Length: 224
Image (cartoon, rainbow, N blue to C red):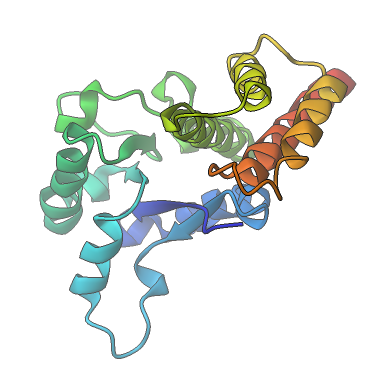
C-alpha cells in the first residue's frame, strides 16, 4: 500500500506533552497505514530544519494547528507556519484543522472560520477526562482522512460498476447511513477483492482499512 496521508503538526514547544498524547491516540490509525505523522522532532541530525519544515508543510494533506496561548504568541508558529497553512488551504491543497489544546482567544484569527476540534471547540485541558477529548479529536481526524480518500475515489474516471457501487456504499458509511459493523466489514472485503486488479488505479486497500477502522468504532459503541 502506498504511503499514507501526511499529517503535519504545527505546535508550540510548551505543548510538547499534549502533542505526544494526541499522537498516542492516533497510533492505531498510523499503524493501519492510513496516515503518516510528521513534526519537527522527525528532522534528522545535520539536516537544515527550516527547509525540512517547509518541505513537509508544502506536501502535507492535513495540517493540524495545535492552538494554545503559546502558539498564538509564537512568531514562527503563528506568523510563518500558520500563514503558509492557510495559503495551502485557500489553494485547495491542504485540509487545515485547528485543535484547541488550551483556552485562548483565537476566533478572529485567520483560521477562526475553520471547524475546530474537539467538539464545540472546547479546549482539551478543559475536559474532565483528557483522553475523551483526544478520542474526540482522533475521530475528527479520521473523518477528515475518510473524506480525502472519498474525494480521491470520486476523482477517478472509467471506474467499473462494482467499484462505483462500493464507492457509494463507502460514502453511506462515511456519513453514518450504514453503521452495522458486519455490513461495513463486508463492504471492506469487497474492496479487498479489487486489490490485485490491474485496472483499478485507486488505493482500494486503504479504503478497506478505513472501513475496518470504522467498523471497530461502531462495534465499541454497540457494546456500551
